[in-house]
Image (cartoon, rainbow, N blue to C red; front, side, top):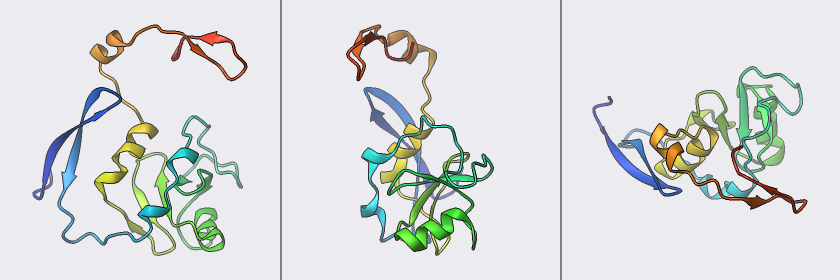
Length: 147
């Protein structure tokens, strides 16, 4: 565990989750955190770049929700950050968040909900406590969420 960190408990969707809280003395603050549009993020899609269709080194833009490959110069994510003025991207494999084109990692506790939704984890007890309640699909049919 990092020397400047401690564990905190956070409640998301009525479930307790442990997160690592890191002191951010040496980590730059990102001026683009306010540009994130959580309502456009959907991590249920296949993790493929929307341009190259590659599944290698894919990042999701946290402003528009589209998936792009790479973050170095001349990659699709880098180009998207310059052309569209979208600067925050999450690595769909390791959940690290970066600011492009400056290419620094963004560490901020306000982003934990996005990381959780990218890769939700449930204990066996959480799953046993879930109710089998019906919901309505967009076409009006009934279904049990998660089944």
